[in-house]
Each structure stands twice: as structure tokens, then as C-alpha cells.
Picture 1 (cartoon, rainbow over the protein chains, first blue to last red):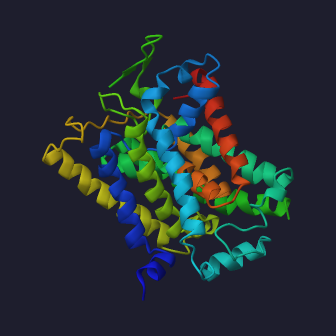
Picture 2 (cartoon, each protein chain N blue to C red):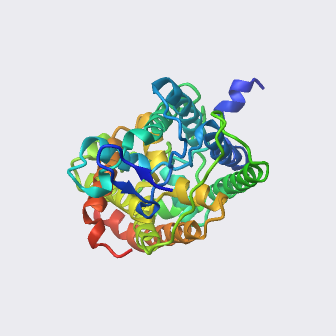
Length: 191
Length: 166
């Protein structure tokens, strides 16, 4: 099999996980940068709409590397999707498919269900819940927690920081509660 | 470690919850920053190829229907942990020949309250901040709205911060 065909297939966790883990030493050795992504949102606020809020009055230009990093992630997402796309349909666990189908999801063909995540839903209740509310919680919550999956779960735990363990457990607890208690209600609401 | 803003002399201390902090003393110009863009590109490719950006993978994780995400996060932390130990043990230097320094995280209740709120948002959007960017790059343009809302959420936190329990 040609190498490009192997790359096009979905990468297993034991390839992807270690590569993501290597981001930690790579960033540290390239320029003493601690891995973390959610702070990019804070730098955007500081750069564009600081509004004299003390939390956004700092030298964001010193942290501009983080904006280059997320710009890179966007480009990488484009490259992987348009040049290295998986020729087959995504394989989703049968149990998850059955549950989600019962909640009204019909599209299991891509990374995201088009039932929800399509542009035509932006100005609907779906958009309000899944884009506006969901996004708000991601931005508010990660900043309140002082980091996200990268800053706490990966960087923090790699550096044996117990506050990061507390944060990671909280992320998971919130996610489990939402998936099993709130999401069925939300999906019913937009059905 | 604190950052001093040269214009206003305001101090951003670590309690402000900076993740992804830059500890390099030498300032870097535009071209020096290109290397972080390249790391980001590779990182974004991994995100999409391992389908971490998929709403379905996050659903599988929270429904305990697949090991994939646990494997990804678990092996990432293992490799990160070993790397950080090696860097500390052998006192490795950065490209600019500086001592690697990683600030400690300070506990505050925000890690619990904020963590729970982020968890809820994670399950709804199927994305943490990193995958948001990769999803947009993948052509899911509706996620631009999610990203703008996440920025608004971050801004609102900054506004309400003095009144929130920490």
C-alpha cells in the first residue's frame, strides 16, 4: 500500500495521541512555550475589544505565537480535509448511532452531523443552542477554568499539576452530565 | 512568573489563568513565529485525521461507547509527561539557549465551576477550543459562529471576573 493511502485512512489513537503529546516538548524547546489553546481567545479579546477590562489589559503581543499556532490549526484542518481526506465513511460506534438516531440525528456520514452543524441552521433554534450557547460555554468555561483540554488535561497533567487534574475531572463531569441529562432534552427541543 | 505590560505596568499574574504562556525572554518577530504556525498545521492535521474534531467521537467518549478519545488523551499525556521529565532531568535548553520554564498552576474554584461549564459546552459543540479552529478549516463554516460566541464567552468572563467566585 502506498504511504499516502495509509495517511488518508483515519489515524488510530496510538498514532495521534503520542503526536499530540509531542507538541508539549516541541513548543517548550522551540521557544519556551507552554502548550495551551484557549488563551488564544483571550488574546483576541485583548487585541480587538479590550474595553478597558483589566483582564484584557496585558501585553498580548508577547503571546502572539498562540495566534500563529491556531491559524496553523485552521490551515491543518483544511489540508487534512481537502488533500488527505479519508475515502471511506466515518465509522461510528453502533451504540452511539442507535442512541443518537433515537434523539433525531439522521446523518452519520461525516465528522459532524449536518442535521445540526450546517450553515443553514445558523439563524434557527439549533444554531442558537449548538453554536451560540455551546460556543459561549466553551469560551466562558475554559477561561474561568484557566485552560482547556490542551492547557490543563495535556500540558498541566504532563507537568503533574494537581489543579489541572481537578479541572480535567470537572471537564469530564460536565460533559457526562450534559450528554446524558441535557442533550436529550436539547435535541428533542430542536427536532 | 509575571508579565509586565510595558505601557501600563499592569501585572498579569498566574492567578489570571494563563495557559499557553510564553516564557521566552527574547522577543520574537514575525518570521520566528512562523515555526508555531507550522507546528499548528501539523497539529491540525492530526486533529482531523484522528477525527478528534468529530462531534460523534466526543459523543462516543461521553457515552463510553469507544476507547478512541481516552486512548488519544491518555497516550498524549503519557508522552507529554515523559517529555517534560526528560526536559527537567537533563535541563534541556530552548533553541534560544534559555532554560525551559513551566509556570505552576495555582488552584482556584474556577477550575471546578469553569471546568463544569466548559464540559457542558464541549458535549454540545463536540469541540474544545483547538478543534473549533480545525473544524472551520475543514469547511464547517457554521462553526465560525461557535468560535465568535466562544470569544464572546471569554470576553464576558473577563467582564464578570471580579464578581465570580474563585
